[in-house]
Length: 273
Image 1 (tube, rainbow, N blue to C red):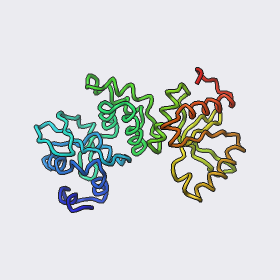
Image 2: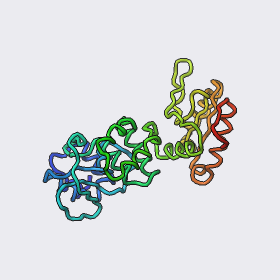
Image 3: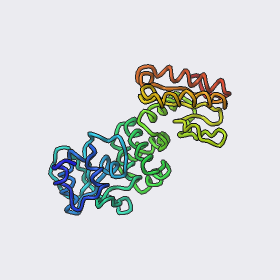
Image 4: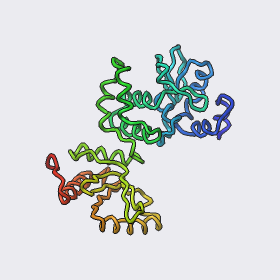
């Protein structure tokens, strides 16, 4: 940990707190956030609360805090004015922060749609929070700015995503008109788990997998991928493999291959894709 990060931390500093501070979601605005925390009038919200809950992929994002008092601006710190109900606040490593469901609510109402789904997916993955848990909070926050926006997000949230690219792939498929895929499908062969498919449709034995860099550069991973594909094919599964280039530049290819696979397995697609 850097000297600067250590100085601004309230004492004692737990290893959990130290890990969070090293993440970009705290680094820039930690001094201001720690000042409010020390006064007892601040609650970490949004990105900062998500980081405390163990959410990944938040590097370089600002610290965020909610306070009922007037507050000076600090570089790298976003300050929101307003109180938060006690049952929507918890404590982690000595810091007061919003609960996972309230954190998801705040992220959902403030972020652009796709970014909100990506971050909330990651938060739900880290905390095992579900869209149903978030939905249960909405009646208590009726009338809060952005509540309707969060409600529209909920059908797209899935904590089974293990990467941002998995979330982006799933959003592409749902928007293309496919049935919402199940995530992290456990496939067992001869008593052994041979795959946890990123997503797919168990009923029709069609899976969709995002192949990251390790699938191309790691020899051991590549060798296992070849065996795994053969096993899945022998079991009757068809797997649609997705690359970064396809996802960013040729999404129609993913849609067409998925549609072809589903039709071949007897899926009654709702509309032409």
